[in-house]
Structures are given as structure tokens and as C-alpha cells.
Amino acid sequence: MEDKWRTLILLSLSVLLSMGVYFSASAVVPALTRLWSLDDSGRSWLTMSVQLGFVIGALLSALTNLADILPAPRLMAFSAFLAALATALIAFATSFPIALLLRLLTGIFLVGVYPVGMKIISTWTQRDRGLGIGLLVGALTIGSASPHLVNALGGVSDWKLVIYSAAGFAALGGLIALLFIKEGPYRTATPKFNWKYVGEVMRQRDLVLANLGYLGHMWELFAMWAWVQVFLTASFALTDLNETWASAVAFAVIGMGGLGSLLAGQLADRFGRTTVTIVSLVMSGVCSILVGLLFGGNPVLLVILCLVWGFAIVADSAQFSAAVSELCRKEYTGTALTLQTSLGFLLTLVTIRLTPTLEGYFGWTWAFAFLALGPAVGIWAMYALRKLPEAVKLAGGNR
Picture: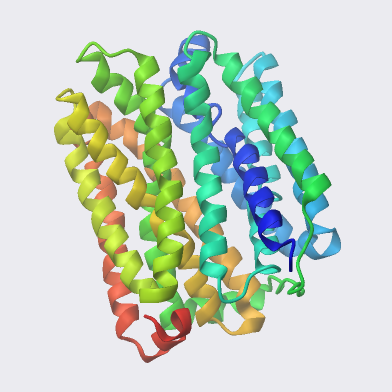
């Protein structure tokens, strides 16, 4: 156990470096739009293809139980290497369909990074698991934001710099996992995915409500992450601030979720999962409505609101998975978590695609407002879950 925090910090660093490939193409949407003459659908698919790949990868991993067949640190390392390769090849793509295929493969490979990292976290933590998961989700969030920082530091003038940097960081993250990460003393076999359990998971009221809360959260999260840089670019252009500023702010906005996730992980263990998720959903939902009203206005006020939104929108993320793992029967855990993840990432395809369409009809003033529907449903679901007797299983009795 003396290696615990050294391992957890290095594990989080590995995830942070590896997850930059997730939004590497989304961070340079304006450049790729010009390169391939993309319409709203094409721009959306730069992110949607990764989401779809992640769903496919999650199901394949669950059905084959790869995280138990292969040593988790090695699986994580080679998954990061493959994601890095798929990302680097985008710079050589001769057509948009080839780029989409590479993005799909990136999503598939990343299933071997973040979820496997979560598995390794569980082998080192017990009572402090909320803190451990919060640390890892925070690393994922900052890593996802990192392409925007590279964009601000030079990628605006050369989009390939963002792609190569993300790929290089992912390779470094894989190397860290390969050389320094090991599983802890609490290692157990991963509960397997079993199709016959799906129906039972879908009929258990407390699990249905926890999943509805998660879906409400996912309805908002990835659409905001995918389009906030484009939104800021358009808004700042009206106040004579260039795209470099938009990329820098986008990095800060998404990266704020790292702080939110870490803080929420600690608070949820102490004050309750439904309490933390409801507060987070209220904050992010209100921000999604208000942010468009500041479009083209005072950039300082807009940045402050976006930072609050970025903080709140991720804070509840890990708590929905934690809730499902606590509410379901042990033999259903693998099925319940895989089902939750797959449904959530599939749902994001809807909002990622709808956002630019709504912007075309109503402008950025109201394009993000429809995302508040997700938090509204999530708040209702978590409040209803809070009143059920089964909620006593959450966070050691802290509802």
C-alpha cells in the first residue's frame, strides 16, 4: 500500500495525457471545415464518430472481458498507443470518410484507457474510492480539454500541430502505464456482461432512476464539450477577440470540470450522491440557458459563466456510475455499468448533432438552451431515487 498514491497519481497522469486524442479533431473544427468543406453534419461527426466507437468498444470489451484476460496496465498502455496512432494518421487522411474511420477507431481504443483506469483505481481504493474516482475523472476532463490549449499555443495557424501533439501525449501516457502502473491489493474479477440480466436491470426502479439521472447528465455534457469552442469563437469575433482566445478559454472551461469532479467525489461520499448530483444538475442546467444570452456581449461575464458551467457539468459524472454499482446486485454490476455507459454515449449523438442545427435556426442565443432538458429530467430522477428506501445503499447511507 506504500505505492498507492504514487500509482494513483501516475495513473491519473497517464489518463490525462491519453485522453487528449478524444477531442483532438473537435478542437480544430474550423480548420477541418475549411479543408473538407464540411457542413453541420460533417462537423458533428468529428465528435459523434468517437462516441459511436466508444460504445462499440465498451460492448466488445464487456463481452470478451478483456480487462480480466489481459493485465490491466498493459491493456491500458497498448490501447493508448493504438489511439495515438489512429489520431496521428488523421494528418495524412486524404478524405473526410477516412478521417471518420480513424476517429471511430480512436473511440474503440479509448475504451481500453479510461474504463480500465477505473478498474485499476478500484484495486487501490475502498473507503476513499470517491476521491480516487474523482481524481481520475478530473484527469480525463483536463486531458479532454488539452487540445484546446495546444490550439491556443499555435494550433490555430497549423491544425496538424494539435493532432500530432495529442497523439504524442497519448503515446507518452501509454508508456507511463506500461512502465509504472500496477494493480493494487483489492483486485477482483470484473463482473461480466450478460444479456439475460439486461431486462432485470431495466425493471429495477432504483436503477432506472439512477440511469435516467445519468442520461440527463450526458444529454448536456458532450454537446457542450463539442461545441463550446465554436460558440466562443463566434462570440469573441463580435467583440474583436480572435480564435486563439476562444481556444484558451475553451481549455479552461472544460478543464474546470477536473476541479468539479475532484470536489464532488469527496462531497458525495460525505453528503450523499443524490444531493451532489442534484446541485450539480441545477447549476449546469441554469448555465445552459443563460450562456446564450451573453453571446456577443461582455466577454468577461461570458467567460465567468462558462467557467461555472464547465465546473458543474462534470461534477456529477462519476456519481451516477458509483450509484449504479451500489444499487445493483453484485453479479449484475458489469452488465449495469456497460448498459449505462452505452446508452449514455449513444444519447450524446442526438445532442451533438442537434446543437449546430438549432444554432442555424435560432442562433447561438438559444442553441444551448435545449440542453437544459437533460438536467431537468436528471433532477427529477435523482429526487425520486432519494425518496426510495433502496437509496440507503448509496454512499454508506448518505443519500
